[in-house]
View 1 (tube, rainbow over the protein chains, first blue to last red):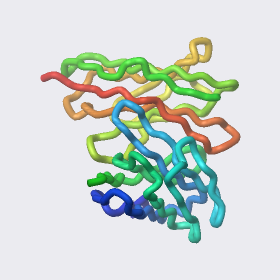
View 2 (cartoon, rainbow over the protein chains, first blue to last red):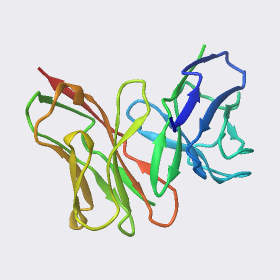
View 3 (cartoon, chains in turn brown, blue):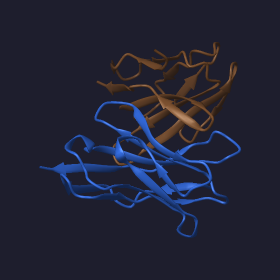
View 4 (cartoon, one colour):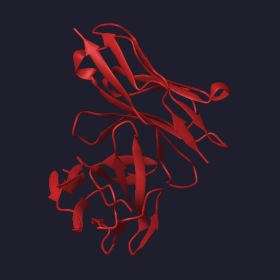
Length: 110
Length: 113
């Protein structure tokens, strides 16, 4: 089945540690996105990539980094510089203005 | 800058009653418009989309939405709500010439038996 796979579903991190969230797609889409979701705030764009080896900052990129070495993969690293990383993270790919979402990763800082 | 407003944070309706969720957008031109639904702890699923043409759009699960250019609105409707419709609903806009999709804050729907 084609789709977006995010892993892990739940992730715990100690303060001061970097952590990487995985996002893989087999839809052959060029564009991929990372969103952060907090209660009552909807989805906020962290980074997006429209093509391999290229990506742009979204509205809340500080404290995050990404890479796009392969079309299928768009991992997100939450660095220790992100002051409030506990949130639900959603990855999406896009084609023809329609977004397809993964099931999300819930990150909790302990 | 484009923005999306969903004025209702939380709506409660009785099962079998009709539903309307509001969405207003601010944008220089008519963008592409979307409604997504999210069950707890899950990703988002597309309900319907409007690109052009007929302003009344039919989607999955019996939902429809009407685009009103004069009001900059794209409200979601369902004639008879089912208990399984309880979820969070997001309106989204995307300009026609790039991929910068923006989401509203969401409306949480509770369905009473």
